[in-house]
Every structure is written in C-alpha cells, then in structure tokens.
Image 1 (spheres, rainbow, N blue to C red):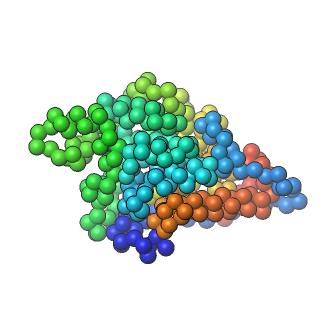
Image 2: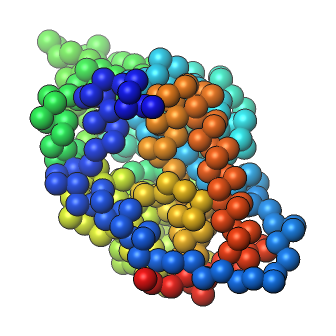
Image 3: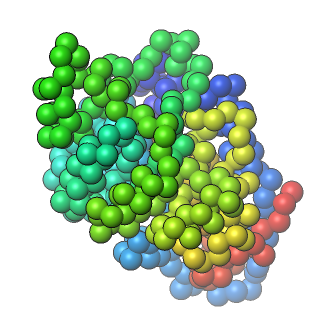
Length: 350
C-alpha cells in the first residue's frame, strides 16, 4: 500500500539499503536461520507481554525506531506516529532529523518518548539538543554511533534523491537557539550549508559520550553496537544500554547481520546493561527469536513507516496492534508462559 501511494524515489529511500544491499538481505536471512522449539502442555493462559524498559512499564517489548524525515511519507509525520505509539503504550524514539521539532512532537502526546541524537560536530549544539529533549519530557537519549558519514546508498544516488538536502529533516535545527545563533554569525552561508558543516562527526569517541553524561541526568543508550568488544566497553563505561543494530542495512554494506551479533554480545555482558535489538524485525516470531538470543526488547522501523504512508496515524496503530497480537500468539504457541523464561534453549539453528 505504501509503495502504491508514494513516489518511487521516496519509497526507494525508505525501503532500500546501502551498496548492493547485502546487509539489508542478511538481516532477514539471519532470522530464517533460527527456528523456535515449542514446548506444549504448558499453561499459557496468564501470559503477559508487558515489560519494564528504562524503568517504565510498556505494553510489549517493542519500541518504535528513530526514523527521520517522516514527513516525506505523510504530512503529519512524527506527530501521527507518536500519537499511535502512545495509544498502544509503546515508546516512540524521535529522530534528530524529524520533520517536526521535538517540542512539537512532545505537545502531541503524553506517551513515552526517547530522543535519538546524531551527535553534531559542535559540543555546544549537542548540549542544546540534549537539554531541550530533557526539558520536553523525553525519557532517554539514544546516541547513534554508526554514522560517521552517510552510507553509500546506490538507489538514492540513482534517483538523485536526498530528503536531507531538500531540507526535509531540519525542524530540530530550525528550532535550536544555539544553531540559530551560529547561522546568524555566518557570512553568505545558507541554513543547510551550516547544518551540513556540523551534522556529521567522524571524530566521535568515548570522550564525547562522557561529555554528554556529564551534562544530562537522562539515561544514555548507544545505537549501532555490533561487536562484543564495543558492548563490553559500553558496560564498563556505565552506559544504561545498547541497541544492537546495523542501521537497518542502510550504512555499511557487507557487515554482520544484527541478529548474528546478538548472541556473542549477550554472552559478553549478560545483564550488566539493557540490550535492545534493531534491524530486521517484521513479525512476532522475529521478536521471539531476538528475545531468546538475549534482547530485552526490540525496535521496529520500516513496518510502521509503511503504515504511516498507507493511512497516517491509523496505519501506524494498525501495524503496532498487529505486531503485538502476532507476538502474543507466537509466544503462546511456543509454550512460553512468561517472557522471563525465554533464552537460547527455545531456539535452534536451522
């Protein structure tokens, strides 16, 4: 439905991955390599999918991934998505490059909201964005660590399409007083020119994370972790949690599938920090497998964006309802009476 409604270049932007899309395909293929081993004659009549994430009880172990520029698929963009998430009692993670500012999104709903930060190449702007998120009632900061630069996205290059360069994800920068002052000081530079100068930070390192930890009381999650080594570093550093993610196959092509990284990361850090999973979740059985391999909860991305394109807030809510129901049925049919039971014993490799 989304493909029928959207222009080809917009749909390609949403659906595609980097390079030859090997990573994009690997994310789904990884799920097919694991099979659920059901247990029968167990009482599943009292099963609940409710879990506590970041200290808050939510309806299911599902969070809405930070996806930027949602206004390109529907005029209400993140406003509609945030409302739908709140109605389903699932956390909405708002992107730095949203079509509406974090304050506008916050004014639409009292649901659980986290803020995803693309760490800018200017600590003063980083501080401003994080402080605004805290003031606006966001409950956590998710720092994306896998975007030293934009991935080589061939379909977008073929289509000559970049919503970023078209100014589609600038709302948070437009509303930022620190960035506004920077633009006013620049000579003969456009708003987008200045944003491009500070948006990417190839030098991002642990010192930058330490700086953010020193200026905010919000818990910090690192999104884009794929190695046990980086997970160990995050745990030792005192980070609240990590998101095991390869950016939905949109950054480094030819890299490990997120699901293939999950088991070794869980083995390394155990329960030392919250492990969230992202990249490839499409159905309830996928969530069962991710939880069994060590995730505490999962992010879902493209599916809800397709729902947004198809029917706005109603479309997003329908996708979330279906995913929650699919998860409940999958758990019940697997004989899982409590989410706490799930571990690697419930699955085997094909």
